[in-house]
Every structure is written in C-alpha cells, then in structure tokens.
Image 1 (cartoon, rainbow over the protein chains, first blue to last red):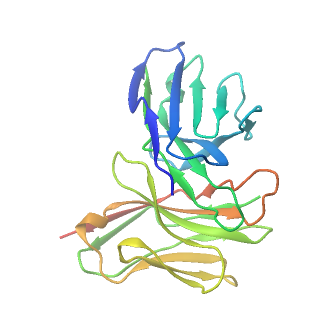
Image 2: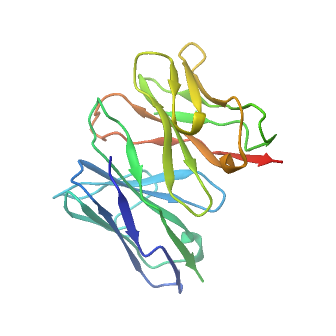
Image 3: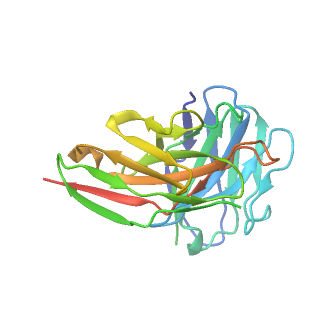
Amino acid sequence: SAVISQKPSRDICQRGTSLTIQCQVDSQVTMMFWYRQQPGQSLTLIATANQGSEATYESGFVIDKFPISRPNLTFSTLTVSNMSPEDSSIYLCSAGLGTAANNEQFFGPGTRLTVL
Amino acid sequence: AQSVTQLDSQVPVFEEAPVELRCNYSSSVSVYLFWYVQYPNQGLQLLLKYLSGSTLVKGINGFEAEFNKSQTSFHLRKPSVHISDTAEYFCAVSDRGLTGGGNKLTFGTGTQLKVEL
C-alpha cells in the first residue's frame, strides 16, 4: 500500500492568482494521477503525472491551466493557474503501482480550494 | 471509452437493515472494478476490488460486491449497516491492460448512503 499526503489541506484564494498543491507518497510508485471533485459531483481525472516527462492530460484540461510536475517517483505538484470561482473544487492526488496484477489506486486526503 | 452509472444518488436506510448500492458499467474492453468510500471531509478509501476469479468479492467493513458480466453490474451490498457507514460511495472501473494510459479510473457519480437510527 501507499500513504499519500497533500499540502495544503485547504486554501481560499483570490481570482486571478495561482496555487500549487503538493503530493507526497511514502514509497516509490509507478503511477500518479490528479483528480478534481467539484461540489456535489464525482471525481474527474485531470491528468497522469509522468516521471521525467510531460503530464498526459485528459480531454478538457490543458497544461497552461493545470501545469504538473513529477520530479521523482514519490512527489508531484499540480498548479491551478489564473484561478476563477469555477475552479473551486477538491483536488485529489492518487498513486498506483500500475501493474496489471495490482490495479489499486491510493488517494490523498484532498485539497479543498475556494476561489473568491 | 468506459462509463459508470450509479442510478441512486441517495439511499436512506435504517441501522441494522441491509443495503444494496447499484453500479452498472459500460466498456468495450475487459475491466477491473472498484468500490471506494469517502467519509465527510476525507479522501477516498478502497472498499473492495474485482480483478479476476470469484465473482463475489468481500471487502472491508463487512461490504461485499458481485460482478455480473452479463448484466455489466457490480452492486455493493451489506447485510446490516451501521451509523458509521454513512458516507459517499463511488463505483469505478479501469481497463485491464496498460493501454498507454496506465490504470486510469473512471468514476460513477456516487451514492450518498445515509444510515438513520
């Protein structure tokens, strides 16, 4: 298994500013992902954070808005850029071994973002 | 592409009563199936998963789910619920192979289980 921590746990930000969310895993993992959970809704995958290369973004999400870094196998950051109230969501990091035999993902506690 | 349908957005149930949370999926390839639980103001915790083998899967906290390939369903059940089971439950799927995208999860919209005295 893997234990995941996220910082900050919550933040209130002004429109037009940017926030960087950190995700730390207690062991080396193959796969790391970033999800968004808008109020009262399900989780939507933003991107797969690839170690040593550019992240792979899902339809509707772009690098300029959500730049992602993954410098090593235990750490990743997601930046929410030029924020608007529509970006108010919970952002969750997850990690997985990424093998066919073990497809489980472990989730961090989330970062609750409110944009005013 | 895959999709997950959780038809019940809310399920109220009395304590010690049985409960079933429904999940149906659609996929053009074979899938893995998961149920996650989210307690208020917390992240997601894995309840159980179906990878292969027996279609009846047992998870934590007394929950179980049955994979039905012909009906493309993976309903979650518990014979007797407790107040502490009040939470949001998410069904999710991923494809079986590393098709270039890793083991991405597609989630359903969630079912809020509310256990009452």
